[in-house]
Length: 117
Image (tube, rainbow, N blue to C red; front, top):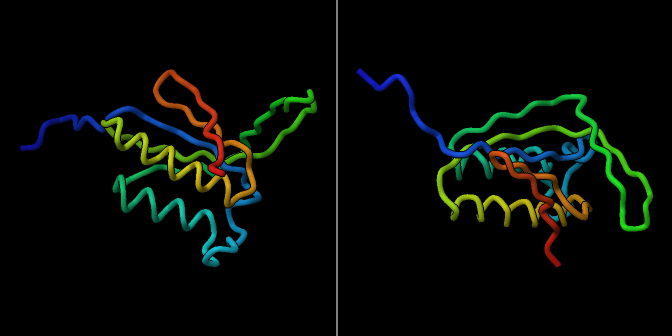
């Protein structure tokens, strides 16, 4: 009989602007939603996604207020190498989406993942 609990590692969540998830990317024509799904399933074998009315607000360097409706993606894993792989994927995704940064939480910590290039 299997154990009653299976540890999955540290929960990590990131947020993507909802209006950008279904527009085909110029690179290969796939949508960001499909690209994220493929990456998370192939690499981590499971994830959760919450289409929602989560709104994010932030000030840019000039003090201008920005806001967006975001969708949440959540995945768990146990190693720094896997965390770094997710960060690299989000850096590339950030550039493809035209975002300066993607909000990422891991356990009790929060980060901005900045685009590459």
